[in-house]
Image 1: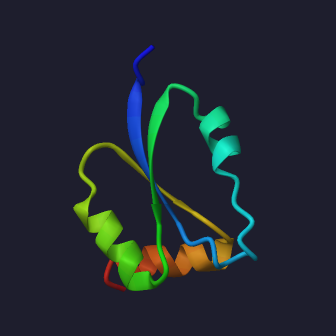
Image 2: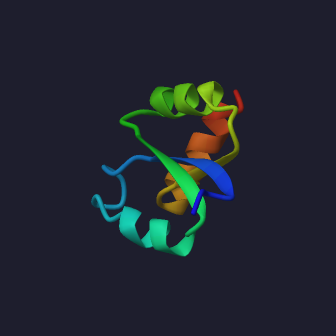
Length: 76
C-alpha cells in the first residue's frame, strides 16, 4: 500500500531527555510516509524546514522547544 501523504518530522532528541518515540508516531500516522530529520540546533531546524516542500511539516519535541523552533524558523 503506498502512502496517502508525505510529511517531514523534525525532532531534537537531546531535548526532553531523548524521550521521543518514532515507532509510535509511525503507528499513529499509518499511511503517511515520514521523513525523519534529527536536529542538534535551531539553525538545523530552520534548514530542515526551509528545504522541505514535499508535504506536511511536523516539529516534534517538548512544547517550549517546539515554540522556539517555530519562532526561529519563521525569522522571529
